[in-house]
Image 1 (cartoon, rainbow, N blue to C red):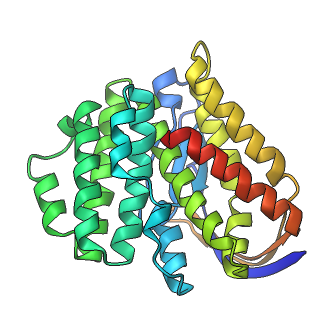
Image 2 (cartoon, rainbow, N blue to C red):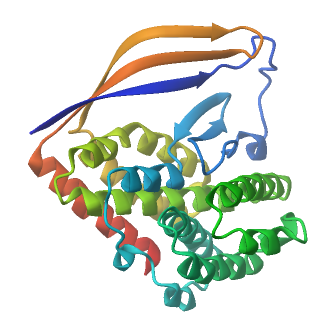
Length: 294
């Protein structure tokens, strides 16, 4: 049985009291990626904001824990030939985005170039490339060895893509990219957790709430869409195992910035997870990820 106590800072973004509460149309209610690869992504729907850890945040944790680089865990670029519909292309664009972040974190520039090329191709096939400035891919390619510059460029690119998808009634594509990136980063985290690294196990347990948020995002697109329903069912199966992970919070203090309408809540997070549940999580995540990349 693992019981891990870690200190975190939770940022809770509060809507202004004067914000309109009128019913929103379906496109406006769709999930909206606001933040970047650097920190948590904040997804918005039905006047609520929820946090989902970014892929890069998780790969940074791996590096900070001195986890040895292992390319065998990445989705081979040769798999792209198997992705023949927009559903698979969008999911795996997210997967390859997480893999690119992993490669960048471990300073594998040459490999990053290959994965970047695949992401570029998928964005062209999805029609997303039209949302980016003409020199965006050229600038990203030139900065693949510069971690800070690359993160800044990727952050801006994801925001541009999100705006483009929403304005063209393709929010469902953005949701899949988000899901693919999160699942891939969770997969990497789970594989390295097999070595009994308690910090990584705690990070794995922390994703219980983000999974619930992702389920809410994907559920927006399941009506009359069997493909999204299948993904939702698999996420719910994973959530069933996560129900056996105990996550509790001890709140320390709260800071309120009235000008920015921002509340910072500082707390300790307590993660309790048994060996059996940990093994179940690892196997279920592995199966979910295989479903996506195959």
